[in-house]
Image: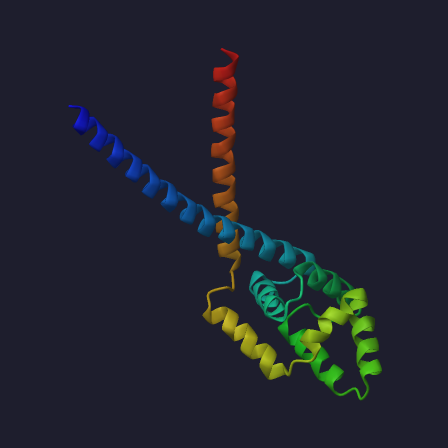
Amino acid sequence: VVGSWTELSSAMNVGMQVFSAGKRVFDEIIGSTIEYGKQVDDLSRALGTSTEEASKLIQISDDLRIDVGALQTAFRIALKQGVLPNIEGLKGLATEYQNLKTPQEKAAFALEKFGRAGLQMQKFLELAPEQIDAMAKSAERAGLVMSREGVEATKRYYLAIDQMGDQLNGLKINIGLK
C-alpha cells in the first residue's frame, strides 16, 4: 500500500510539473500577444492611423532599434507639419532626406521634421523607399501586422482575464471576512 501511494504521489508530482510548464508557456504567448495588441492600439490612437500601419511602424522601428516612444514622439511632431504617420509618409521623407547633400543638412532636416527624436529617426530616413516596403512586407509575412479585429480580440481577452481575477479576489476577500 505504501508503494502505491508513493507511485501515485510521484505521478501526480510529474503531472503538476508538466501542467505548470504548459501554463507558463501559454501565459507567455498570450501575455506577449496582449501586450503587443496594446502597443499597436496605443500607437494607432496616438497617431490617428490604422492598426495595420501602426504594426508595420512598430516592427520597422524594432528592426532599426528605435524605441516606440521615440517613434510616437517623432510622429506627433511630424503630424503638426502635415507629414502622414504611415509608410508612405516615411518614404516621402526618406526621399527628401537622401537628396540633401551634407550630414549637417540631413541632421537639421531630421530635427525639423521629428524634433528631438529626429536623430533616431534618421535610421528610417537613411532607408531607400524599397527597403521600407520590404521591411513592411516582412512584418506582414511574419504575422506581426495586427488588424483592428485582432487588437479588439486582445482587449476582450484581457478584460475577461481581468474580470476573472477580480471575481477570484472578491471570493478570497469574502472568505477572509467570514
